[in-house]
Image (cartoon, rainbow, N blue to C red):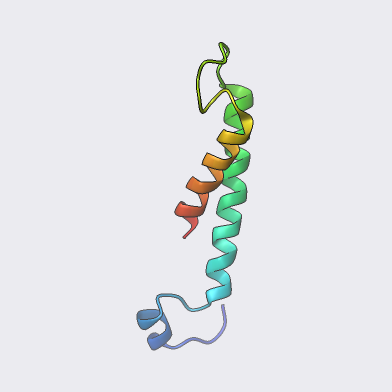
Length: 71
């Protein structure tokens, strides 16, 4: 993690801004992968489900949720 000051941690909310961006990107990637896994494993067999019947919608939704959790 390196050297940091309490000022950086308390005022800026993060010791390293690059680390925060990495967490967001990794969260979005993991969320997208989990969204695709949900589509493949659970999905919607009838095709009438607006979100779960489309893999791109679930990947996008999963990436968004992962991004929010990672931030």
